[in-house]
Every structure is written in structure tokens, then in C-alpha cells.
Image 1 (cartoon, helix red, strand yellow):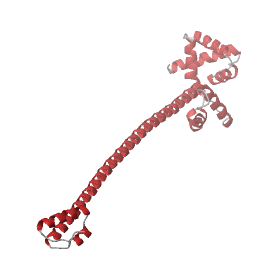
Image 2 (cartoon, one colour):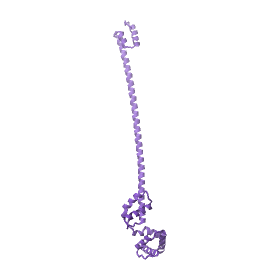
Image 3 (cartoon, one colour):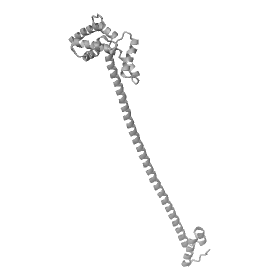
Image 4 (cartoon, helix red, strand yellow):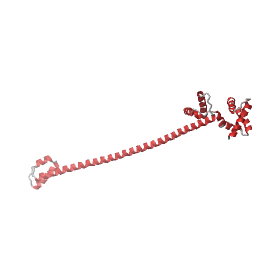
Length: 244
């Protein structure tokens, strides 16, 4: 609505206030003060909107909306001059109050600190509603970020555990392979040692036979069965060994 409409609204509002309350105010500000003082119930306000709608040839709802959302702002203080205090109260009570309760609480607290302060209700309501929405959105974003963080954390932990398990299995496999090699080495060493003993015994037998070593000496170094074999061999070769 343009400036011309506001002037028409000013005139109609002053006229309606004087007619309703029997006053003789002349300015829109004086009429507004009377309205704040005496319009305590919805019926009184509706009668004013209805009377003004006839004067301006518009619906009572349009009169109501224009009065609260636009026209009455000119008589109120700028809420943005008190923004830090308002935001502090919102942050303190947002989890415990509805939007309407927050608005009323803010008005009461600021009124104590600033007795002459007049805040525009609709503007304050819109501001509080917007700030609460921002706070709630931030909470939701933090929750989403926390969920994403926990998911990533679980994924990393799972990968870490899997890698540790795989490393452990690899170590076990390597240990088993090494143990197998060690056991095979021990077995081979034992076989070699056993074969070496057999070779040594065989050489001793051969030395006794061909070097004419008394059989008594050989018997002291050999087993009974092997001695018997040598005795038979000695007889065959024609040597006169003394048998024991």
C-alpha cells in the first residue's frame, strides 16, 4: 500500500478511536496510545477494524493485517538495536518455551531494563521464529554431522580390525611355514647324523678286516650282531682270529 493509503489509514484510525472511546485525539500517535491503553480484548479491536473497513472500503482482515504488520511499526523501537540481548534470551530458553512464550518473556525482560521500550510484536515474533529455526537447523546439522562422523569412525575401525586380523593370519602362516622348515631341517640333520654313524661303523669294520686288528678290539667298539658277521668273514678269509 502506498503513502496515500497510509494517510487515509491515519485519518480513519483517528476517527474510529474517537468514535469508539469518546476521545478527541488529533494525531495517529495519540490514537495509537489510546488503542494500546483501552483495546484489551479481541471484540473491541474487531469493532475498530469493522468501522475502519467501512471508511476505507476494504475488508476488516485487511485493516487488521495492515495495522499489525506495517502501520503500527512507526510507533515502536527498532528490535535490532537490542538484538544481542534478544538472541541471548532465545538461546537460554529455546528448549523450554514456545515461540509465543519466548516473545512474551523477551518483552517482559527488556521492559524491566528499558521501561520506555516499545517493541513491535509481529516484528519481534518473526525475528524470534527465525532465530529458533536457525538454532534448530544447526542442531539438526550437528546431529547429521555426528551421525556421519560415527559412520566413518566405525568404517575406519572395521578396516583397521580387518587389517590387523589379516596381518595376524599372515604372521601365523609365516610362523607355521618357518616351523615346518625348522622341523624338516632337524629331521634331515638327524638322518645325516645317523648315516654318518653307519658310515663310521662300516669303515671301522673294513679297517679291522684288512689291517689285522685283533677282533677283541673291534668287539669292544661294535655291536654283537656286527661282530658275528666279522667272525664269519675272518673264517672265510683264513685268518686265525681269537673269538670271544
